[in-house]
Length: 162
Image (cartoon, rainbow, N blue to C red; front, side, top):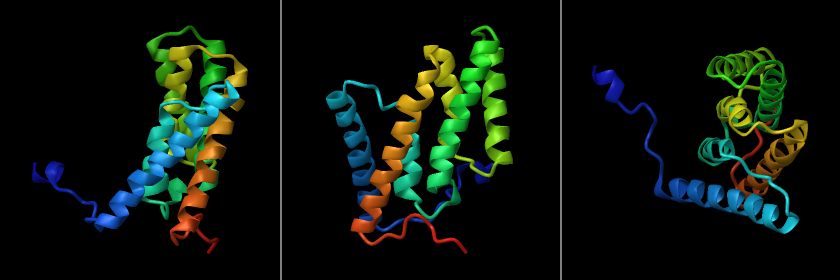
C-alpha cells in the first residue's frame, strides 16, 4: 500500500519549480490574450495540462513539439470523426479516447493531455474547424512559447535528435 503514496518524482530546485509555473502562466496568458485580440477561441482545457509537461519536464519525449502538436491534432481528429459517426453518448466518447490513445501510440506522438481532446469534442460538439482553431493554432502557439521561454532561460528545448 505504501507504493501508492510514495512520491517517485525527484525533488526539484526552487528555481525550477518557480520557472515551470511562470512558463505555464506566460504561455496560457499569451494564448488567452491572443484569443481576445483575435476574437477567436485559441484555448481549451487540455492545454493547461500540456503546459505541465512543456514547462515541468521539457526533456520528456511526451513534451516534444511533434508530440504536443501531433497528439492534439490526431486526438481531436479522432474525436471529431467519431462524434460525426456516433451519437453523443458516453460509450462513443470512451471509444474516441481509446482510439485516440492507440493512434498516438502507433504514430509515436503520445501526449497525455491530448487524450482529453475527444472528451472536449463530445462535450462541446464543434465543427471540423475546431481541428484548426483552437487545436492546431493553440498547440503551435504553446510549443512556440515553450521554445522561446526555454531558450531565454538556457533550458534545452526541444530535445536534440540522437
